[in-house]
Length: 168
Image (cartoon, rainbow, N blue to C red; front, side, top):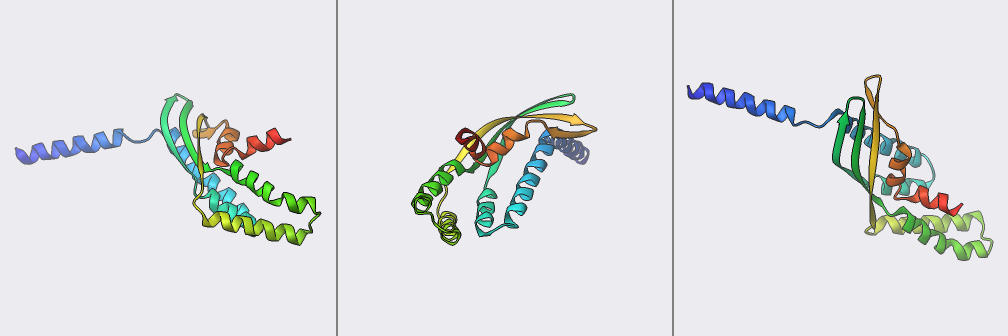
């Protein structure tokens, strides 16, 4: 009788664990987030030394899914994305280069100063920014797709895309 009770209890616990799994939309978001970081990082690593260093900084970002509301073919995920404070660092970078711009520096001086700045940046403890994003997803042909990818990318880059748009 005790063995039978143990097996029933074990099956019950197993079913509870399976039932408590992540929603499909969350799994799709997590997979797509990781793939996006990998793709962007890979493209950056194919560039110059500065791009490679920026890729390393980008890869240190993370996310946390706080809440999922999934109904039929639509889902809304409340996500916090943590990324390096690219706005702060790019502002510092431009300030550091201003004297060289004013003196009509050559390409070589620009490259050297850029490399120096980003080498120092990768060696220090970075400041991070956390951005709360409401991720909207839609199920298309059986697969969950992020609808507002631009909002997610802005958060991944620490608000840099918004700052660049404001600058123009």
